[in-house]
Image 1 (cartoon, rainbow, N blue to C red):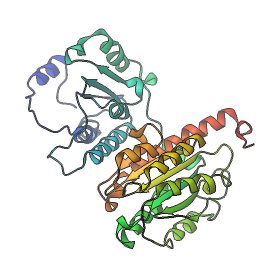
Image 2 (cartoon, rainbow, N blue to C red; image 1 turned 90 degrees about the vertical axis):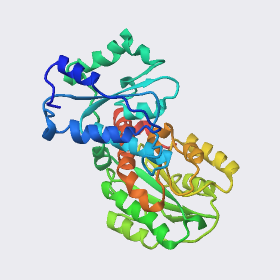
Image 3 (cartoon, helix red, strand yellow; image 1 turned 30 degrees about the vertical axis):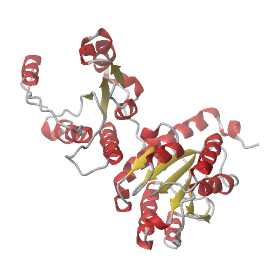
Image 4 (cartoon, rainbow, N blue to C red; image 1 turned 60 degrees about the vertical axis):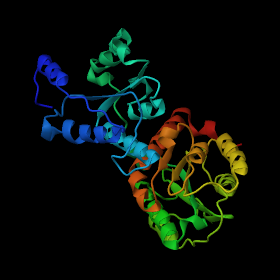
Length: 362
């Protein structure tokens, strides 16, 4: 950051960059390096000056053969690194060039959709629209720059009703792997104020294989410790993957009688495989969507990405998370936490603005 001191030196350095081709697009590595090597006071970043990053690509995240990651997991890493940059106060702009860009991914990388530009060809990068929409925004006064919200405050200061819907089918193969799902939940809820108060969050749990089971409801445990201890006593039973039964139970038993007016309702689905009955899954998903529940989906192992996208609330870029296996769930914990807190913050702000009296259940 403190190597070049005028535009001529910067332009000269840019012209001396060598082009190297390759079969991978490691956006997550570039974002990580920007965070650790550029936007860092130890390397010359100034704490009193706005930080701006511009991500320019003509494709999408692709680990190729450079990293041993699946494509969905590599995209999760990109989203994680982008969130870390934004949480550190960096204002991120995205520019997608050409027809091969994953625009949903680029919007997720950027600090809001208004910070993302699409151009049809590399030659379009010099057009006036680019200057007006990107360079113009960079030159605005700092107070006009949209800074990332302090998202974890939404989880500690606003209530939510959260149901976990957890796979315990035979494809997990062992009680040990099932317990890893439960341990993930126990660590995840550490970021919430769990309790019976009007400003507290409440957590319920459903499990599913051949049948769905209502393990405990939103009102069953009044402290975080009680909740985490209850997770230790959930039994593993093998079977098929009838995901739709769990979604129906979440809707009909989990949220129907136990939710609070005006409090955000969150469903978090964890699964390692494809639904045994995809037709019924489509019907169940449609009913959940009509209910207004915000759904996040986590896939691992032999997950079906199209089913995760189907179950999750749009956009998929902020509501679908994938890892290679159950032992890697913690890799997405922080990212999931931030996205859930974002949703709680938006829903809670709506409630505070319009009043709980306008959100009564008839």
